[in-house]
Length: 413
Image (cartoon, rainbow, N blue to C red; front, side, top):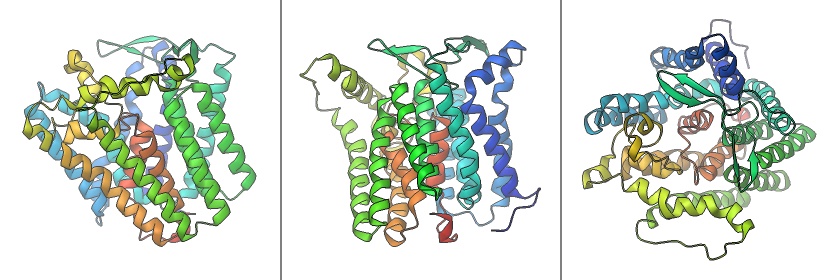
């Protein structure tokens, strides 16, 4: 591959991505030191750089693919509807602010997935930082843990300090334990899918599993197990067609469960009979999703029209914290989040479009491991997290939506 010139769009995308990824991986100390020198608002500079790059990328991308058009069209339509339908137009605009990593991912996918080896080097460095931070947190208390910052007249927790059933949840250099877990999962997935050294792959994958276990984040750990079995089967059977068909079927089932299980909570009351401490530790948070988070989130759609077009951008999650605090719900599921914002048709479209494109390409070509593995990570973890409010997961989901399969097959190893 020809090395991009210093002023090339690919090079600009790389450095903007590197700055942004580094800022979220080191979010805890980054905000801590900025607050120390009275420049806490500068914590948002990497995201603002993404925002400023969007119109430039939109102009440069003359041959915009369908995934980009679908994603951007849905975002803008939902924005205008949310500005009219929600209590405040600012709530919808804040919803747009949340989606900046997603939109940048849509417009930059061709440059990132077109050079996975180059980003592999970056992600290896980020992976080492994430894992080192989590393990260091076991023996050291970081000053940013539990710190309360004042940003825009709002109190914001820098790095969450919390525990589950008496077990501490370590975030390392990230803002929360689940952020560190998702970062370890995504970086490890990218590295195993793109690196050739078997020893490095093993070291990365088991280091990721150990780090995720330390964070006690069960969703990422479940995704780590599923992806581990995928990579193992890929190594044994060399992505034979029957193996690829089996994995497409498995991901199809997971995707179906992530949609129909939350919908079922509107009519079915789930109970966990076993109240042992182990069962509560493993399934208590999932039980809360079944019993109140998912049904209450879906009940935000109070009118038939909202089931069709949603509440609009910003209708659920973080924007509610500032504009509808009494009704705030996190969704804790990708489909639920999309459904409340976009309505049922929009949620089905956003989920099914990348799945059918990537799955069909994976069935045709055994080298499509990277896009399929990334999509599997998002879908599997998306059963219990809204994805779009995690900057890295949102960015990766956008790459999946905008994957360009006309590029050279060797790029997806």
